[in-house]
Image (cartoon, rainbow over all chains, first blue to last red; front, side, top):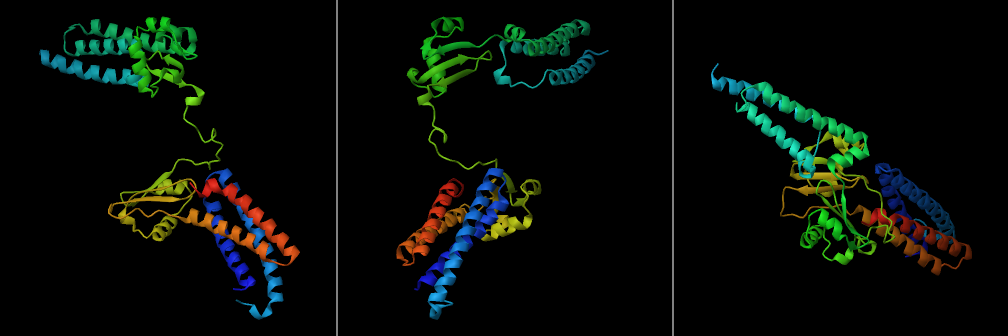
Length: 68
Length: 286
């Protein structure tokens, strides 16, 4: 497995987790709980953003693996 | 007039009168009333019985003492509400039996309790050793309250420095296979949501005996069919595991990569995720 596809896998996991967190944030009854999930949303968004940037660099470096 | 007609009329009217009187005297747990209240209640009951069974033939002679007792009890209660002194005088004061871990023998004598009885009362409060008790008091109602030494008290999450997610009371949304609409609405959830959740668990509505939703939106179900295990959602644990795995992956990327800037980015994000996992732990792992 190439580095790019490994990064892609982590990205997929993080995006899936983010979806679940979003659901919990919507369901939460207490203000405090919602704040925690909102913070989690923000952090994961930042990480996903960074990883996507890195991924485009990787795909540029290994163009023959693009799409894997 | 026949005697039995008299008894019938009196009984019915006393019954209605007493219903009103009991309502007037307010709510009180019968197990924890003061001796004064008990005497009052018994007197009122006996007077009512005597009038209704025609032992007191002249109704006025029965109703006057009944009225005096009821009015004075209500009056004294009102007085007790207004003045602390009157309250202590009418209901009696609590007696401190153990203070700073020492038994107050004088108070014990005043409350007419033997040491044996004191130990028995302590045992009912789960204090088997006198050494564990800091303070114990005999309430005016006869209840016994025990304050344990601080190192003998059950540890709370705060004592252990554990962060715990706040949880409000759960709502029951299914009972006997029927969806209860009001609790569902109070959580801001729709019937469709419940349908999807049940589908996720793979159970049908008419197989559910009880289903509750906690304030974090998690559904717990108990099935009619006791031979199968109750399916419980594992989404939270899965979410935590997924994030944990991502964190570990980021760490290994940081180790593997040649590029300096990428290394810094991976390390920074791995740290961020670790921080997040710490915050989420009480919410996701219970």
